[in-house]
Amino acid sequence: MVKPEKIRHVVTVAVNAGWSLDQCYEALSVTWSFSEAAFEVTLRKLKSEAEINYGDVGNRILYLAKGRDDEKY
Image: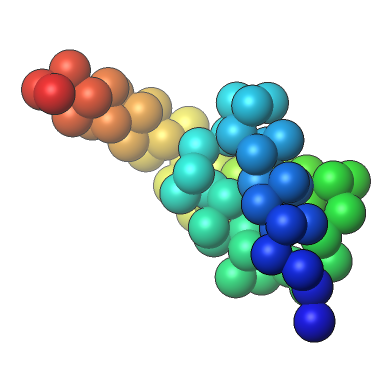
């Protein structure tokens, strides 16, 4: 079992590097390794898979929609 402090550390490093908390939660559901390097690889893999699923136009629409949601608050 991995210590919660280790998981918190890799998530904090990822968030400080610019990844969103939602992306980190998704990566936590995929990876079994909690080193910084392995977690970053998982984040990048999930991002590239999302780009393949939605394409450039779909990703741009999602990005703009998220920006509008952030402006409401």
